[in-house]
Amino acid sequence: MITLYDYWRSSAAYRIRIGLNLLGLPYRSVPVDLVKGEQHSPENLARNPQGLVPTLEIDGLTLTQSLAVLEYLDEVHSAHFLPPDAPGRARVRALAYVIAMETAPVANLSVRNLAAKLSNGGITADGWQAHFIAKGFTAFEAMLTHPETGPYCHGDRPTLPDICLVPQVYNARRIGLDLAPYPRLAAIATALETLPAVQAAHPDNHQPKG
Image (cartoon, rainbow, N blue to C red; front, side, top):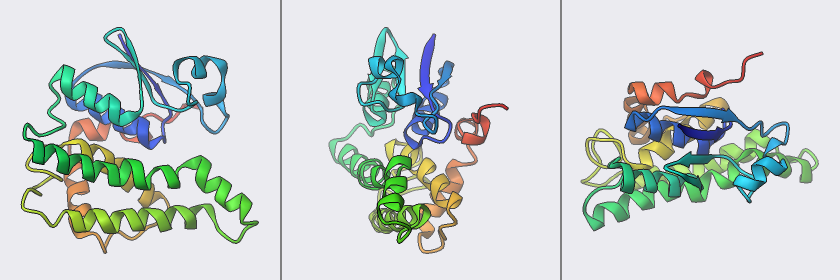
């Protein structure tokens, strides 16, 4: 059984849910409540020394870091999240990194809350997050002006940046960020959100009961 240590609103965990669903791989979800601080528990630190989610147990391995996990799924489970050609792989990695390495880390729960706290109210958590998502989306939108952009970020099937984009769009909508300045990005997100595998990964379907 594949086991995903998950938090329903974690962007990184959301990526893995999408990836597993696109592959049709069933998995068991074990929640790790980031709001309650469960990521710092001895149990979670034993499997993920960074004290983060997600952690994926698959094929007898314990894997961390969402992009590394997605590339593992690509290599071992023929996910086709990366194109077969080197220029294509470089492009989709660059797009994915804009979201997963440059945007999401500075706009995540712990950073946005710390920024609000240290500013003594001069910066709101939502305002901090909106600033950095807009900055990342502006670059991402410009990078989509490329002949390889199709119905999705690269061609006619979801690849690594598509999987990263969906959770970030979810976060943007939660804080009321207008997507009108990013028409290509918004159109791709809309196309992705029609896919059953993506719909099944949505946080609303993984929110703890009670």
